[in-house]
Image (cartoon, rainbow, N blue to C red; front, side, top):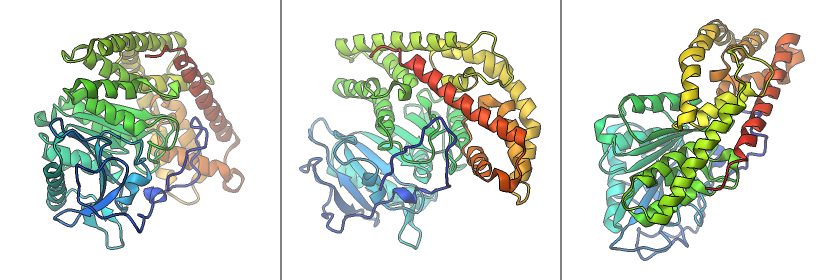
Length: 461
């Protein structure tokens, strides 16, 4: 059963390392068995099995237009779970109501009742068989895959194997397997790497690397959606913003040729309950897509043009809120945390990209050079009993030396520091490192508040 993230998201609060198992929910014993059927609407969830034996849950769209077709959204769980994870964490009533939503078991059983999506040819074949069967039952106008954790790695793997059959991928807590194919054949796909910056299970840097690999390979529609201070949990029902639905709307909006679907996708990105969790970069790029789409209705085009102006002005407001005297050195001021949050959230907006260039091309390399020593020392001590005090000191020093990279963007480091600080007396942690750690927490809190305060002034798209 899903759990709501109640802790303040601007703090280094990770009380325990957990797996996605906490989000598992046993399937109802009376789940009706039924093959995918266009006559069924989104009122019920059914269960069925593919020809290759892959069990899946499915829910039909609220309305099926046979000539028009329907979108297919596939939800892939993380390691050692089952298809029940899908609808346990994505409301059967609210999640992608216009689509055929399918949540399959992983393609390889683990022998203990759970399943995994592996990168073996047989796993890809089984999944392709399932997709083929769904396409025989429904006319599919677009195929979108959302994968979480291991499921996200497989989603990217499958999209590389069948680039002509997958329109978009939302890879949450992800990265790329070495066997995953990337290249020109996938350039028409829209891909989002969505990752919590404080994920202690799959490092945030994995998605950064995956994103950079696809950018280098020339993918024109690839984004990194950073969820500030989020951990490894699913992101659809753990707060006021349906992050997964947002990103699925983005990949569909960037690839659809249907005016009605483009309008619906834009609305999903433009209308959110909390501006500090708005996907400004996603809204901006989708608005740009709308303005150059010949089939976009005039009212939608006008709304998109308005949104472009709002986001551009907002990015400039953030730039102006960062002190012009800011230096590479860590200091007890909100901008230290505000800056990396801003750079992560506004990639692709001119004012932000121009501002980021000087930091990423000049100051970031200097920070990385200064952090090399503390990083090496932290890694050497972190995994050894009896060296916690040393690891704590070096971990804090690492954040101060390279706050653009490590401030609130390394879940394992954050978890370790919080754990050691809790046992400060027992571990004999130094007073100065503890004082610096408290300062870091204060700066992160103040930075989040500053970041949110600027966003709050944005108009409604």
